[in-house]
Length: 237
Image (cartoon, rainbow, N blue to C red):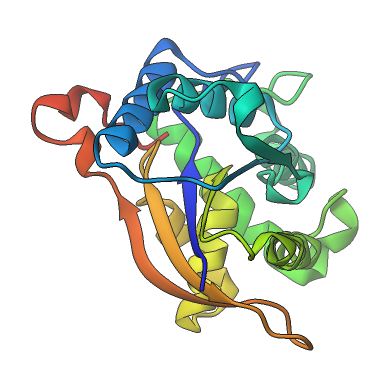
């Protein structure tokens, strides 16, 4: 059975006008992870990534540390592994609640930062997960859940490989973990809040013809590579 490792991208720019861009620290996190995988002789048969810029940048950094040239390794690009549009989810809350509109710029960028942005984000996601408001979103909550399941179904075609590494985001990772543990999908954000940048979550998988791939969560949010003398690389968003 193949081992699928879901890796969260490096630190991006939460709350900024251009979130989809790794910080310098984000590059360091993924290059360091790649070096750690190489040092532990962790072979990867297939790399998969979403189509977001931070996914491409993160995989490039990881492969730099891993010591593998981009042309020598099979890399699959699949938009189904993309994160949900957190800014669209937050804008929808602002439009629905006039008293919050002053917290956003005209392009939807939050005008607050730090813990205030995070609290507003969690409130926005809670509303998104309520199916009473689906018409307010280009991608509804149920559509996002279905997309992540589709990502796994499409990954099943790669199960002839023994080790697959997927560079993705916190949403697909936490939703996948929730499903594997049999938790209601709404618990996603409780898991998501604990995920570190460059953390690894591992699943043992097997193919199932009619119901899609069965996955067993083996580990969640491995991040020993950003502890100890490397603790300066530890970030959550």
